Length: 314
Image (cartoon, rainbow, N blue to C red):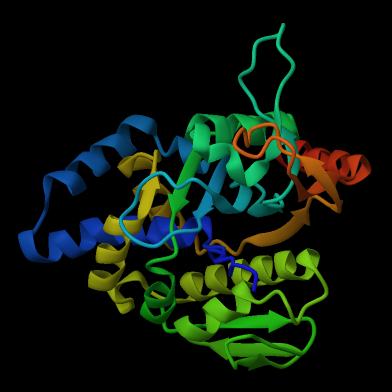
């Protein structure tokens, strides 16, 4: 029996932002104005809300683990979110976990070793981000890294989501989804994104990830922050989320969203390829073993890269 692969559901950029802001709100409700909140406000003034006036990119890494935040040997879910505030547009690019890539940071005189994209975090977050930058010929401004532990409770904390399925299917966890809109709680949402055997390959599961991402985003945008379970979001984020976004930037984005009532136009893109058997040079303990990897479709990669550059420069 094959080992079950636990895939972290796609959690949108702004959901994580809401969670992070929820920390200061939850603390502030008890302690009045905290030093964290004051620092955030000062930072916003100093930056002049710059983050709401420029395009930027956030890499979301979904760790295939439970427990406290920290580095995982695998990044099972990989999304690059391109944000253009002036155009009110988001582009969500999915990178297949099994994509066959070169290990970054090798010297120019050394032939780069080949590995799966999901293995890059073994060499640190820097390698993961650099790998994404090299693959898509772009620059990443921020990263958000989270694990599976809080996903179910996180979905429940925002009241569940309405996710769209483009086909009817059953799951290995005795849940089923009908073509069209399905309202799901945390448990059901997790099975929606984890299912593989009853679908038509990895591409369909990637589509389900992106549909869940949209559903989470829409739910967060239509709910007032104070209507959410702030305590739950605070606890989940504290344990399971890591980001290098500054408090002032996060707060600035949330204030702008609330004041402008921004309606985002969302588009998704996925790098395509085909499964082949290849040796992974980074698996020294299995030098002759060949594993299933996804060989990139260069035309697909070029199209995705072009979309990213177009949104960044518009």
